[in-house]
Image (cartoon, rainbow, N blue to C red):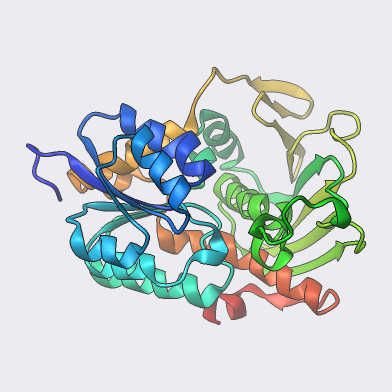
Length: 339
């Protein structure tokens, strides 16, 4: 752990939108944090970020940053497909790891990182930020003594771009094998918050995608999950309209004798009655604050997950991704975890 008389020395791997809109502003507000260095393959993004946040040293090669800088913590904010071995090398050096989600597009990569974290004893967390939001914590409390029967998640957005209208076809944002669409990006959130609220892991996954070639992303994705207690979960992503019909809740958790509806980020209803209405809260800042404090003090209990736990939220989505490519074949999550 860093000595109490010096700041936590942080390196940034990835200087894109997430880093600039959330983590870097948050870290700049925290006392006892030094933004030592940053790395990104995009020289323009890297230079602009370094100037904006007064980061003295920049690197095109993240391995060189790890080798030359004395870091306490690494923030990995690169896209999932770009993850290779940087995080594992950092962990092997004893550098504590903050990983954005999704952790990787291949479980083998994520497992190598998890193994390196476990071997070094590094403190780690994955940016499932809503675990820190009082709304989700209250939902978890309300469900603690309930016998879950089904969890439903749904997300509705507008139509994606027509393939012919994509402004930059070379951009990873428009490539399904790299971006995965909302069913990959927000899909791991849906799984993680369902796990957090219910306390249940997923054991089986099946998924279908409807993706007309004239659109750059699918119009619908449907995931079917089996929970470890035998209950079921569905996770549905629709790209057809700007809002869900009838203003429906994002999460609905059914249990023996009732249901809990979570209207992100507005309220919780239990059996149709408002049970909780939260005050304004910034979970991004709270998780960044908790991670830095955990690194400073060595107190891992300040964090609501670690890198290894995140694999249990990633694997069901990767299993669904594989299932869709196999025509809806049922996939055991344990097999994906071991792959």
